[in-house]
Length: 259
Image: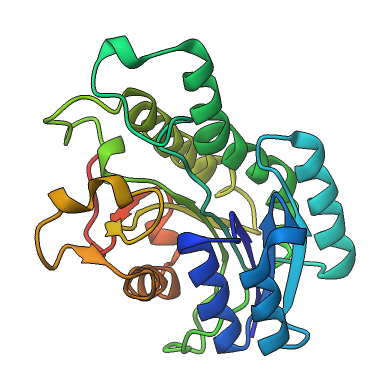
C-alpha cells in the first residue's frame, strides 16, 4: 500500500495525515521533534501495529534530516509520498500586522521552519523518493498509468503574491511565497530523467489547529475545516496527482492558485 513520510507529524494537519494514511494500510514514517512526548503518535502506533514508525527530526537541523534520511533508506528503502506539514505564523504565534512587529530573529526562525527545512528535506530525501512511485492507498483507475512519487509542501493562500490584498503577516507570507518558488524549482530539477517526482504546493484552507486558533472569530461560517475534512480534501488532490501537475500550487478544493 505504499510508504509515506510526514514531517511535522505530532499534531494538527500532520497528525491527521498520519492517521488517515495508516487507516488505509500505508506505512507511515511520522517525523517530529520530540518523539518521547508525541503521545498521539504513540497511540496511533498501537492502533496500527507495524505501520507507524516514529522518527526524531527537527526540520531546522540538517543533522537531524540527514540521520532521518539514512534511517528511511536503510529501513524502508523507498518513499511514495513525502509531505512537509510543519509551519509557524511566527515565533510569537501571531502574524505581524505592521513593520513595527518585525525582527531579524523572528524572520530567521519563521523561514527556517516554513522554507529552509522543507527544501533541505528535498535535498536529502530526493533519491529515496525516486526509488518509490507506488500507490499510497488510492484506487488505480488506469492500470497502464505510470505512477511517480509525490513531494508535497504545505503552503498557504497568503503566500500568493498576486492574491495579496490585505498586507501584513510579513514573515509568514514571505516564507510561504519562497516555499512556492522552491516547489517550482524542485519540480524542474526532480522532473528530469527517468525517475521523476511530482512536486506540488497545497493550501489547506483555514483548519481548526493551534496555528489558526487566534483567528477563528474572523472565519465565515462553514469556512473553518476540521482536520479530517482538510486531509480528506488534500488526499483527493494527492491521490490523483500526475506529472502534469508538478510545479503547481493548489487550494484545498483542487483549484490552482496563482503564484
